[in-house]
Image (cartoon, rainbow, N blue to C red; front, side, top):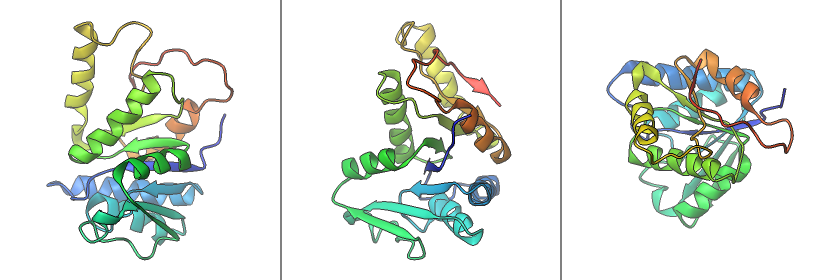
Length: 198
């Protein structure tokens, strides 16, 4: 199996309406730290972003925050992170997050989270990377998105050979093992991977 040393977590700068979202983010952060997996994230100290980062730190893990200069005050940078990188724009932020991560996990979030997730799915669909992408489907949050991707495929807009490959886990405890199993071990072409529920 391949090693996952760092995970980029995409998630909301809000906490959402359900305590389950906060609990799942905190649990994922704890599990990442205990597994020695570094967190790469958007650098904020509020919402689920702040929850997952503080949980990693509280359990002895390493946090790299990458934040555009115009969001430093809006998302309130997490000063306790071991590494904070301030970049000029969103494009630089997303590229640097990609470069520093072995895998990607999407927690609940808003338009920004969705945009980051879809960009990684698009890059993977076009063969630009093979890093695992996982949706943490807390309380069924990502179920409508999964249905939409299925609808796109059924309607002929996701053609054979261009499948959208990602993983779905319902519990934080399933995330790390799923990422490790999905990580590429060589440069060989992967088999097309559809949705796999953990």
